[in-house]
Length: 177
Image: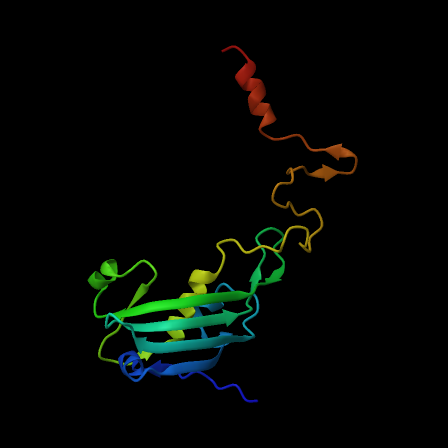
């Protein structure tokens, strides 16, 4: 079974008018902005988008975007592969001012007369779905001694425990001036 590649440009309004479905894959290395966040640019983004017109006459894009990017764990600084599976619910608008009047379940996407960039749409959705500080699940960090959430931040060297550097300031606070 062959998986088709998503074309980069399409007329979003025409796709909505015809009730089209766009499905396929986009190589992660062709998404420039998200590439700055990745440790490994290999892999594919799976895209399933349905274009249409809802009961209230809005041109909509609904579907899913899935990927497994490799990011840097912010706990141990090692590589962590995350599963990103995000739902897309967009309404096409002509200008930014129309976005404020949309129902909460929708985000707006400004379309014009020119074909839209499907890669940019998918990349926006992926960037919004990435965690602010990606981390391995607790206890799975590669670096020994990495501090996990909820664990005390104590650095041991041999048999000695290093004193908190701010403890010295507490001594000054206790002294009369």
